[in-house]
Image (spheres, rainbow, N blue to C red):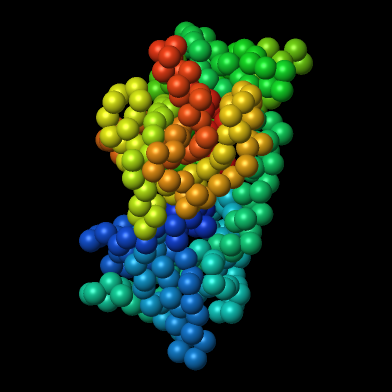
Amino acid sequence: MKRFGSIRVLCVLGLLASASALQAQTTAPTSDPAITSLSVTGIVTDLKPDTRQVIVKTASGNEVIVTLSDRTTFMRIPPGEKTKDKFIPISATDFGAGDSVFARGRMTEDRKSMPALEFYVMSKTEIAEKRERERDEWRKRGIAGTVSSLNATANEISVDTRTPEGPKPIVIAAGTQTKFRRYAPDSVRFGDAKPSSFAELKVGDQLRALGTKSADGARFTPEEIVAGSFQTIGGAITEINLEKQEIKINDLQSKQAVTIIVTRDSSLRKFPGTGDLQEMFEQLPLFTLQELKAGDSILISSTKGADPARVTAIAIVSGVAPLLQKAQGNRGAVSLGAMSLGGP
């Protein structure tokens, strides 16, 4: 039984590791995978010391009242740890709102409440600190670019990267220990990327890699590679729905109506009208959805999802009417490039 319990706890570590994103969605499905007959996984949204109850909200927006008692075992899971012997015993007061939890017990039939026998916590502060370390690591030792060719025999990936000096080719030599992941369709989150392989890479993919660059900068030895198929579409806005956080445009290339879903992860930036859009992207000023109006021309970068008529925006750039007119006149396309990839 102890072994079974350890395995069950380990199965939810992946969910806990991405816990700060759990409150991003609020629409509750008919069946919530975070709630089972014996457990709940989510974020602490409220504590009621008088009744020893904790309100846990799942990623889908459902809430469960977890009741604590003297029989409850409390443990803290340090970020990145995956074995139960590394978990740290804590008291019933060593957690707070915003922390991620996995609680085990017997769920009520309506799946609204549960007395907890085990209560595992991952601190929101520790999660934030770990993520900042990871972001800093990718900034210092990461590269990003577009796959230009693939050599399956040698497991080598040729990538055109963007540097302050301009585009520069580099060869990524993947090894047996290289970890591959692929951006999920319709998701802009780096954390939603799924396990992948060299075989899933495609020419034209946008890619991030973490590892070590050779002294001459021509080759790169990766520890991790995250790639995905992305697209850039553009056109004039026909409708804006602020309540749903959606924009409708007529795509200039496909001549079809497309609904753009704007999320908290979407990056909205204003283009001044001149200069290299890809090189300037990170320095462009931000704007809000409320500043857009029907008739404005925008560019959208997104993953290639199942429905081409609905896409989730990674990046939106306004003020691009001259760029779109020029591209249309030259029968070309404007790209937002690798800077639109969702980072760690």
